[in-house]
Length: 190
Ligand code: SF4
Image 1: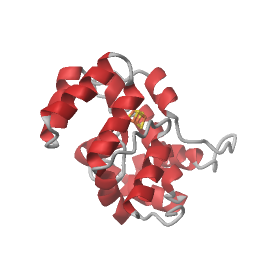
Image 2: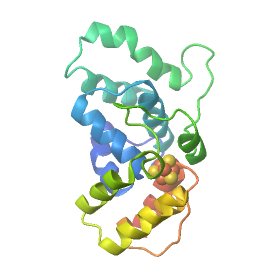
Image 3: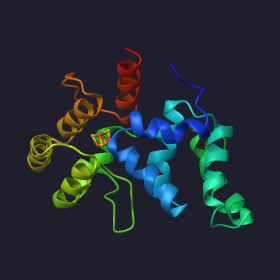
């Protein structure tokens, strides 16, 4: 397993091969905007911790990106605390666990300008359709995924996305974004 050995430099590559769509979306938004709002930082930060990014690497990851448009002082004062907090180094020292699919799907509904949540649940179906098409997905698979979303089978839609993106036929039904990642790594390592 990769656990504990993930470096900042590996994240872009892994986001393309092994991240579920919710985390791809957060990663891309973070790279584009050099910023994520609170729930985005929570959902994505805990996921990254779960795939094995150490606290030091996490601080390096968030700091480098935030500093593209933020004052170092402001980052150190307002943001590094949350990251350390996620790793249980501040506050109550709780070891926060990454969010499950059900948690992502049913809590903290994203508002305009947010990038967290589950795309199969929270993205407007027309927009989701366009995004899937832009990944060169065939019409049949797009239609199948959209119809699963419309009947509230969000995790099955995500599993269908998994099979499509891995050219597999696992009929995987994810219940956790980190499980999706592990399943992908497992599949890719043969
Ligand atoms: Fe992420 Fe789970 Fe939604 Fe898939 S079903 S996109 S892993 S929250």
